[in-house]
Length: 305
Image 1: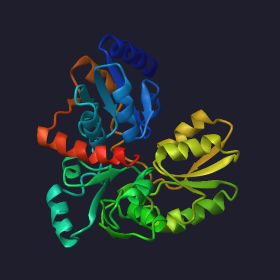
Image 2: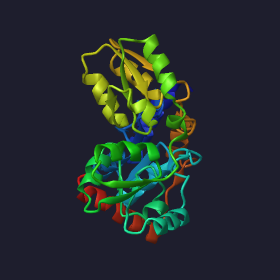
Image 3: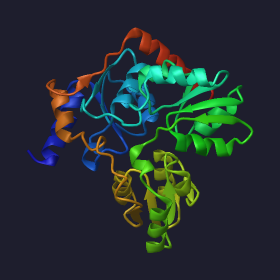
């Protein structure tokens, strides 16, 4: 079976079985082409809520499938590849956060949405990379405990200097690996290129950027910009996707380190097998986790997330 053959069979099966396919922007081009919706984790969950299908296959990592289930409790949700996890989401347990909150009494616990559903039950609110600044600014509290990503937390703190932030020592291993020196070398090699980076990168990287934003923000900026060359400082699949959507422009990866092995685990065959009922994993969460994580996410929505 060729790639095109498998894609056509997937398109047939998803219609037959009343299933919506969601693909995170870090997935391969072949997977994106068979998806009903593409985007970032929270955006995909909201798209699932609007989709008429009663089944959802998530092509991404586990915390995304959990978020999708929490926001769509009446639908069946499958993770196409059960091994696809997120190292950052798995860095902190609820027990670790409870201990940390004891060290910072009076602080509002803010979790990046790139966390497990169990951790969200211990938080006051969660945020996305695009909504983190506005939501932290809107909080009544002037003291914020931001977990688990210190780079995103530091970026948010710099935008809201009137508030006090306590940060943890986690972070995305891929974005953390890019150094300021590596960025300087990339800029020297492509002096006309604009540098677009994700706020999960270190401060020494974001301070050199022409634009700092979420995955969807980077895609939109590059597509709308009149510039012709861009250095992309986030997962390297975004380089490929932009090459497809803007073939008249040039896109360069900042670093080979920005390749997420977990995001690359999901294949067309995984989606195909899930549709056939012999692959994937249906997401089933305890009622207490569903309720606690939903409260955290609803608070984000109330604050404009």
